[in-house]
Amino acid sequence: MSFLKNREAVRTCILSKRWRHLWRSMPCLDIDYEELISTKEAAAAAAGAASGDNSNPAGSDSDDDDNSSDFDDSSSDDDSDDDGSDDSRKRWERFEDFTVNLMLRCDMALLESFRLNIGKGRAALRQGQAWGWLRRAIKLSAPAPDPSSSKRSFSSWNLKRLHLCNVFLDNLFAEHVGSVCRSLQELELDGCRCKIQAITSHSLKRLVLKNCRWRELAEITSPTLKTLDIDGGSNTRTCLLVIWAPAVAYLHLDVKAADFGGSISIHEMPSLDKASIHIESHYRYGLYESKFDVNQLNLIRSLSNVTSLELSGLGTKVFGKKPALQEFNYLRSLLLGNCNIGDHKLGFFLNSSPNLENLTLRHCKDA
Image 1 (tube, rainbow, N blue to C red):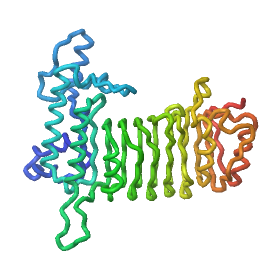
Image 2 (image 1 turned 90 degrees about the vertical axis):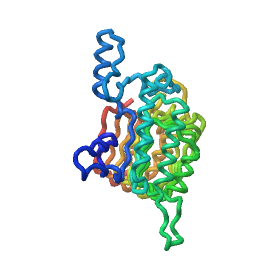
Image 3 (image 1 turned 30 degrees about the vertical axis):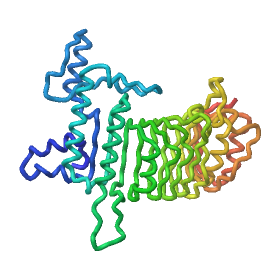
Image 4 (image 1 turned 120 degrees about the vertical axis):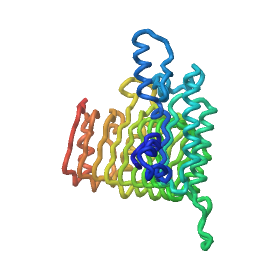
């Protein structure tokens, strides 16, 4: 049952008397607005749109259709799904009722994993409701302390995994992650808007930041982190993001230089085993130069302990005429994709990797 989303898990109560209350003790809570949208109504809506019929397909007993335009991930704060029609409001009310009832009936003290996706285009009021649900999960997932022990904290989280989609987050959330979430091992933020200046944790092992819009994110600090994945997103143009995570074994960084104009700086990672770095530079388009465009060499130097390295998207100005690369004494496998390796730049890189065994060039240019 732990692999089911909560709507399907609740439906198992009709299977037998033994299953009637089993879903309440699930250690996983997966609340997904998009999952609550009925496939049947979505098909009816699509058929109506194709025939030019504007009739309302909400006559069934299931939830409403999935209008993909409501969830368009754009840089603007488009709340058209909130105010466009009575149908969208009713959809949200059903989702709100389901979520509140679910959280009231679940045994939150047993919760180990919490996932919340409120869909894209949510207005400020609904973002506030989402934060309220998250705060409730934080509060109720802390079991009462053992009366015989004075060391047990009322405020410590049981949660080990937290996955948030399309939620607005601020420094209050970051403070909870750093000071209250003492058991949290996995944090994944997907499409979130974050007014957060620092992410700090002494328990995290896996951190995934996907397509998030950050405002002045300046620091990621975790001595326990093993996996760091930053995929897309953007940060304040003038803000330098500094990453200190010495225990990271796997690093994935796939961003546009222009979207992280203040650059990204990584402190040495002595435990790094594999790194995949893709920086889409604006040099190729002749657009403005960001600090990240010219600081990519420093980022590569910080990966000197890696054993397997994938680099893609590096431009001609990254290495300069004669780059001074740090020794990559542990590097065994190197993949260069869509890179400009002219002017003997590949030779400079190979001379810094005395133990290299495998070299792969993919769509590279010698110019």
